[in-house]
Image 1 (cartoon, helix red, strand yellow):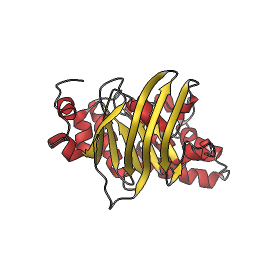
Image 2 (cartoon, rainbow, N blue to C red):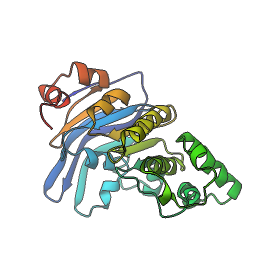
Image 3 (tube, rainbow, N blue to C red):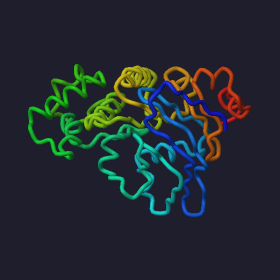
Image 4 (cartoon, rainbow, N blue to C red):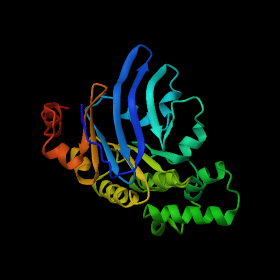
Length: 259
């Protein structure tokens, strides 16, 4: 497996010899690479190659599946999250997640963003008001919804709902935002807005994004990891992956010969 190590960048994750099994079936094999701070890392590969499984290891959501077993290391800020000492609530506060389809809570726009801070102990209304406004501004949604914060989030368009879900994930001030195909259910205009948003957010957060869209990966990511049948085939700067990949399988995939 070809990969790049960028000694000038701070690592937010360092994954070492990660294996994952669903029962007897191995889904991830010897995954080994760093993820850098304040970058967008794209995870690409054909359906069923382990992309979504991998991204869900980074906040241990995958551990909710009873048959899952893992070995190796996932070092986050220098601590191996696979150790039994990891506080899952704290981990998921620091590593937020946005899913493929917008999934706002059936609550008001305001309550969607306020939910996380309340769970983590913030009680003062003025403080929550400030967080709600800040995070809605971060996702360029404030001007669109500021006059209807107390109406149902279900009344928003699909693209607005997805931006609201990103605001909700940011409300606990995470270090990392995981995005599992965040634009696959959206129209082209909403997709562009989410991409522009991701480029803006990487100034403050690290983003790991699963995408089927090769153009999207090429447009907005700094590094790209190509997965195939549970293995990491190649990891490098995105410009290299799409112009001069080291592995023929990577070249075949990014040029559309399979997948």
